[in-house]
Length: 138
Image (cartoon, rainbow, N blue to C red; front, side, top):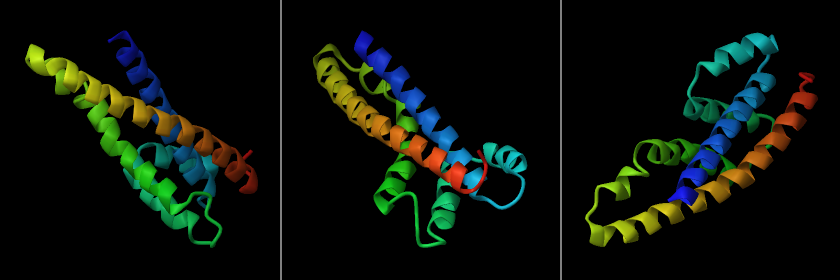
């Protein structure tokens, strides 16, 4: 259970890191004042920003992210909601016979999602740095 708790925290950290970087990338690619863009984008949901970023990113024929990357970015919201709202409840309120099986299933889902987020987080960070340089934001 301690490993589960730790992995939940690490996974939420990765999700927040990805969300912050995606919003910075989008704000940096938008025309206009970067700080104003950041302020406006910061109040939007990740899902909204990912959809808008995908359109903008593909507009010049040289996208930073692949279609598979965008699919994963769109999955973050759904799985993050499960992580925050359901991951514990999916096994905590079961009888003693089902508890271990359901816990293992949740732990595997969490571990798989965490691995995907760690990889994606590193990729998004690299794109953030490259995009902000390309658009003269850093």
